Length: 349
Ligand SMILES: [Zn+2]
Image (cartoon, rainbow, N blue to C red; front, side, top):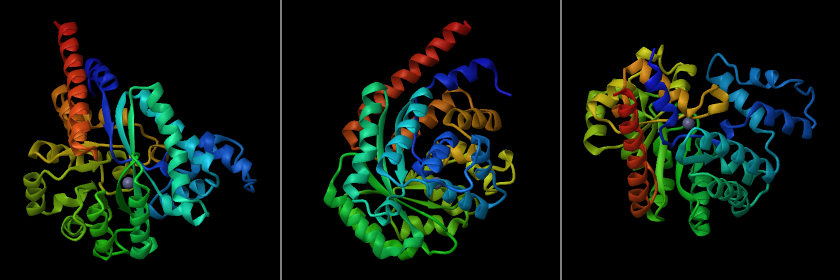
């Protein structure tokens, strides 16, 4: 157990979140409202029943639960609503910067235009940014299951749109089923067009998927990367090249990527000097929030205020912001953390 002082420090800390899916951020109450409007039959009677959809025993159950809920996103205002609710929660947790992603291909298949999807999310972002000390950016999720041609088309469309909210692309979906190297052309094109790149790797598949994300796709950071620990050479490479990992402890636990929190390599990665960050992945599905992830990490890996501050600053370092904006954010967050640490020392003394 961590002491009250560290607990309070974590709650008050300014934070950064980089691995967060909009479709995994649908509150059960909101899911109920969308299902009711969509006349889903039988309709869940209580939010508790929706929460049951988020209870699963394995990856297949997780995918099914996610799909059942997120398939109820039918209108652009649904996206705005979910984004608004997500940003409210993040602001309450003192998140100062968030990059979340959105499975845009899903909405293009519903017949919406890319610019309208982005505009719907941007409305929520602008509103949240005007109300809170929070900045948000969006990455566009390329789904492995939809193939490379669809990914390339979307990359081109994102670059044509050139919207300031959108900073990059990510790759997600079944790592085991679709080889990463297949998406090389989409990622090469994204790089040519000046988009930042990340990919889910080293979660369901071992270190080879992390190597492939780096060598075939040229990603700048890795979502998860947990199973990199199985390859000493890869661990050294991540340290040497300072390739950040967006780690999600509760997600890895619930999807059984690790057997227990003690079995999670996060603490070792941090102490070895990998640029690790803490994130929630699908907060409503996994029943977690960013504060929970920090509390869990502090307890399991015996991290103190200095360690946790370092992990927040790793998030700034790993952000897909342009250099001048990143410098400003780094200064603000460093000052705020310093102030908080000084304050807690004084209270102690
Ligand atoms: Zn994820």
